[in-house]
Amino acid sequence: MVVCALLLLLLPPPAIAQTGALETLTTERQMLTRELDQYQKTLDILQTDGTPAAQSSNPAVKKLAQEMVSIRERLIVITEREVTLLQERILAARTEYTVPPHPGTEPAITKATESKAPRTYTADYTLKREAEYVERLHRLLAGYYAELRESARTLPTAEEISQREAAQQDAQTLARIPFSVDKVRLNGSEGSTALTQITQRLMDPSMPESRRDIAPICSIKTRLFGSLIGSETRSLKPVGKHHYVARIRLQPGDTTLSILEHRWKVRVPQNFNANDFLITLYRPPGDAPELHVFTIDDLMAEERPHIPAWLPDELKIKSLAG
Image (cartoon, rainbow, N blue to C red; front, side, top):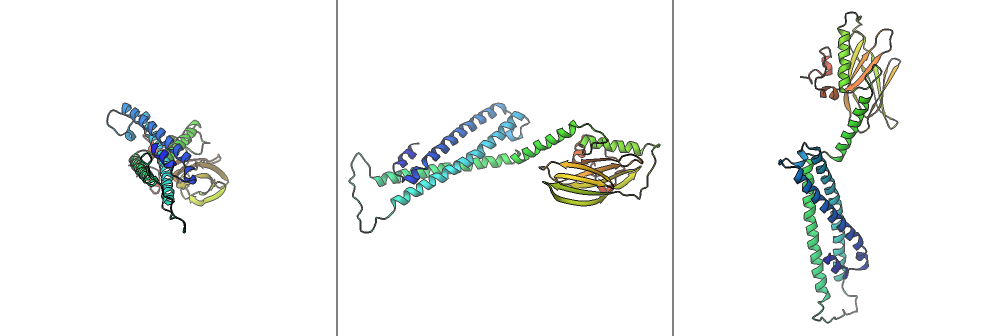
């Protein structure tokens, strides 16, 4: 850069030491700008219907749009650092040329020649060019920020993408474990199946009824990184024939559900938010109890979930189903 080369002749050693870092930043910014332009050309080829890239149903287009957001974020960091270094150099140069002469000394008189302009003129001219360059970088930053704000209205953040990926991995883990009476935490489809099985038992005339005034107490304790972060007890609502249900809210971490002498463990991934779960308990006489836990959101996300009429109104699940 010609301006930088001219300024090097006028700057003190501390400012010259910044030049290597500044040139590296400038080179990296120019490289990212070319990369961003290439991404935009690719998007123009793929996206021909006028739909904004962030709203496209084409996975390749959305991926490119997210990559462009990442590049703009890096450009902002680099350009802001570049501006800071340039402003520091300008300030250092101006300070040097405005320092008054030491008392008792006379400033040296330099005779100007036609082939060499006065030094003060060169300094002022070069510093003006540097200031104009900084202003141009500020305009670039304003453009990058505007584009990021526009993308933020549609595209998910890096944190949201990470949460979605974690949720997908967790769902895939649940899906790999086949549904059985021993599986505690269920996905939405399996939760619907568990409710269907309860309905079938309730409608089975050969199964004996159970007392409706018995409400098992469930102790709920949640630990995260080894520390107890939640503890409560809840009564399970009897719905007939040794079946009980409850709606609880679980936080991320390892939760232990205790009912009488029985214990079940449920793990909610650490990057999940607290969520409402439905507990179903089946305690057949003379046999081991069967407990299942699944989120209400997962259940309602199914295309045709089984939302039985026997669910207590206090759980507020039937109203969600419309």
